[in-house]
Length: 307
Image 1 (spheres, rainbow, N blue to C red):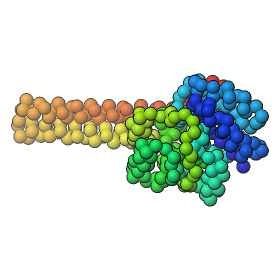
Image 2 (cartoon, rainbow, N blue to C red):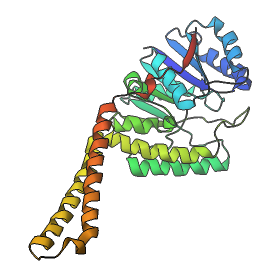
Image 3 (cartoon, one colour):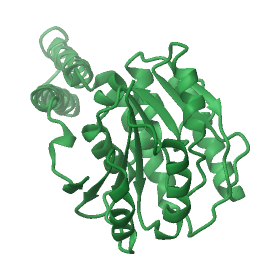
Image 4 (tube, helix red, strand yellow):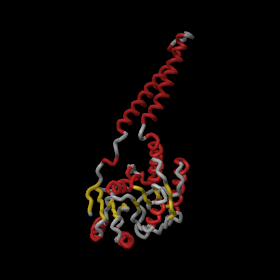
């Protein structure tokens, strides 16, 4: 069974020597394993080092993106250009141990569709540990997905899972959740997490607010992505119904109780606004239905593929 390993990287030149030593020791003799390095617009010497190192490995390749798009787009480029029936991901900063891929595949073979690593003994600063616990708590509570580490970089998937993914923004943090929403079976395995040897994390404080809004988006899209009219149409129906009810009440006051319209001008305006807003919500829903199949990944990010 062919395995594809996807490794996104941005300015990781210091890590590459050690990374290649580990990868070549594990996978260089396995012709059924392809490794795809995604250069996400690195501004250092990452690309040149990659080019020099893959020459002796016929199943290893580089996908070079035009600029730095972020981890989600880098992973999506790898998914779209991989050939394996099983697809693994890992980070390039040496904190992920590539040996763990075999253990995750063993768990996958027990009948799961996605197996995510769990950095139970996480070697990161306290701030990142606390943020991760809060993040994963909200994922468990609001999504029903009972795993401890949704954003662990090392994961394995069956191919059909990656084919349904559309990653952009910060959606890579929620890959298990996206798969869970599609009724795939998810598991996790405790993995070896190591100290960072080189460089610093490429993500700043802004990732917390971005991650929160991405989470809300995924929860909404998971329920209404394929049927936006159900969401906007429901709100529109309620709004129109309330507007008609208010206008009917004003007509009752006018023609049954003989009040004048001038006494209830505010109610008339409110009813009219609710009807107009309701019709606009229906329009939004119909427009959403028209564009719902437009895929973000149709855009072209890849500058070249080097084999």
